[in-house]
Figure 1 (tube, rainbow, N blue to C red):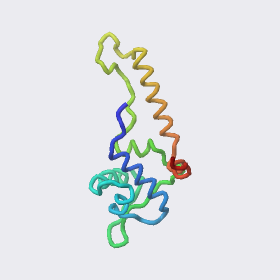
Figure 2: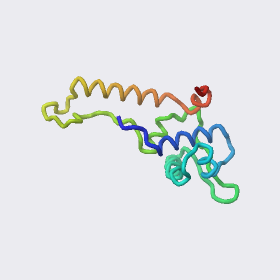
Figure 3: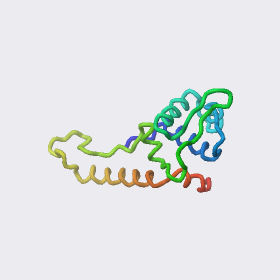
Figure 4: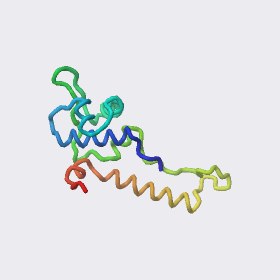
Length: 136
């Protein structure tokens, strides 16, 4: 399983912040300061979120970013897919062993099952769930 990228973490944090703020637009610099991200890196994530219809952006004096999708229906997996950081399933032998062919060995089948479970958990966890969950 590929680790979640820093850009994806910034994107998730930005979306949670925008969901907390409701309809109030936030500039990239405001979001970056609140989530502790470099503004230049955050902008890369925000552009992908805009491109995938998760947030919108408006230029100008009263511009900024706001959440377009409902936190109740927006999953963590949606954000990971938008930032090109999905859970990577195992479809063939990662070791390139020809004797495995298209069949996964017991180990790789088990590892793929785990990735599938993580993917399922991320798909069913919404931003609204994160908003209601207490910090630890």
